[in-house]
Image 1 (cartoon, rainbow over the protein chains, first blue to last red):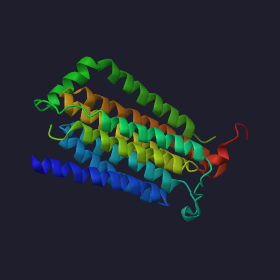
Image 2 (cartoon, each protein chain N blue to C red; image 1 turned 90 degrees about the horizontal axis):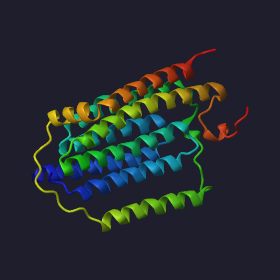
Image 3 (cartoon, rainbow over the protein chains, first blue to last red; image 1 turned 60 degrees about the vertical axis):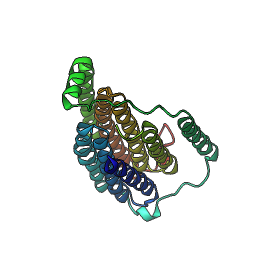
Length: 162
Length: 102
C-alpha cells in the first residue's frame, strides 16, 4: 500500500521531468526519445490506477507504434541543421500570457475543490472493461474502425507522388 | 484506490500545461507542435484513467482506448501532411506556410 503510493509519486515525477525536458531539446529526435520515457512512466501510473489494459495499450500502441512513426518521419525528412532551428522570441506574448492564466486558473479551481476521498471500491477487472466496451460502446468501436480506415485513405492520398 | 483523485488531477494538469507550453514555445516547428499535442492528449488519458479508478467504472478506460485510437489516426494524417508540406517547400517551419496561395 505504501509502496504503491511511493511508486505513484516516483512515476509522476519521471513523467513531469521528461515532459519538461522534451521542450528544451534542439533536435526533435531527442524530444521523441524523451517522450517515450514519459509514456512509459505514464503506463506505470495506469497500472497503479487499476488499468493494466490501458497501460499495455499505452506501451504497445503509443510508445511502440505512434512514436516510431514520429521517429520514421523525422529521419525521413531532411531537417537540415537542428542546432540552427529558429527559437521563437516573445512575439505573441499576449496569447502566451492568456494561456498561462487559463492554466493557472484551472490549477486553482482544482486545488480549491478537492474531491472527497473515495469509498473502497472493488478492483476493476478486464472483464468489466470488455463488457462496457462491447455492450455500451459497441457502436463507438465501429465508428473508431471507420475513422482508422478514413485516416489510412487520407494518409495514402496525401503521401502519393504525382 | 489509494491515491487521492486530486493528486492524479494535479499531475494531469501539470503534464497538460507542459504540452501547452511545448505547443506555444515551438509554434514554428510543425513536428514539435505535434509532440506538444501528444503530451496534452496523454494528460487527458491520465485524467480519464484516474476517474475510472476513483468511481470504479470502466468507462474511463474505454475512453482512454478511444483517445489512443483517435490519436493514432490523427498522428498518421498529421505526419502525412508534414511529409507533404516538406515535399512542397523543403521545410517544416509553420511560418513558411502562412499564405493560402503559393
